Length: 232
Image (cartoon, rainbow, N blue to C red; front, side):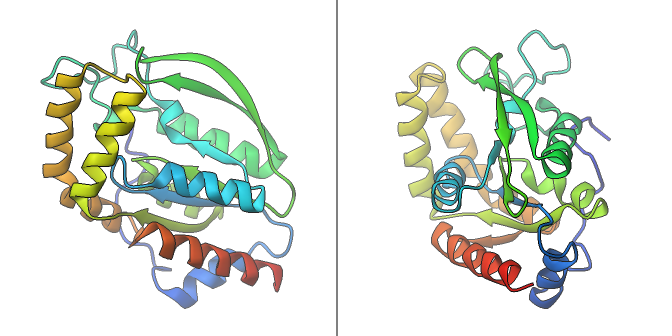
């Protein structure tokens, strides 16, 4: 098992709507829990997380900030000669789970800030959560945290955000180009590979127990989850 594989993939027993609501309420009022948002790169995870954070005041943990640095020999390399951010071993899942646990249990955690362009951690910042907050954790590999978080009774919901994959590819290229993540020719080659592999990424997310929805559907369902928690 690679470092990114915290637990063996599998659909958890609570993968139906009634059981999900029961799992979210098990901790009772005031119990913080984690909402995982996974999905293909560029599908809208970060935009959805930002809207949820702005609307509800929930803290957002960017799981991309737990990528390994270029100096780390454990960081896989792609055939393009750049770090392979789409490989499960490219990020530190154990540190991500530790940070989420601390934020849930203590209401405060310091997390890294990772710069894709330089493949390095460039700083750190503090996240805080109120007693009744949900904690959003978003990233390509978020689905791999379903089992470990479920085992620690930290999970509220796991959703895979997806849209039309050609639209996703176009938005991803514009984003990566504007942020100067890598040279344009690298972004084009990587973008085509991601477009080709997107069905596999979605299937993997579902295998880990995430439900796949359009961002607007996901936002509506999470609003309903908030209402259910308030009535617990």
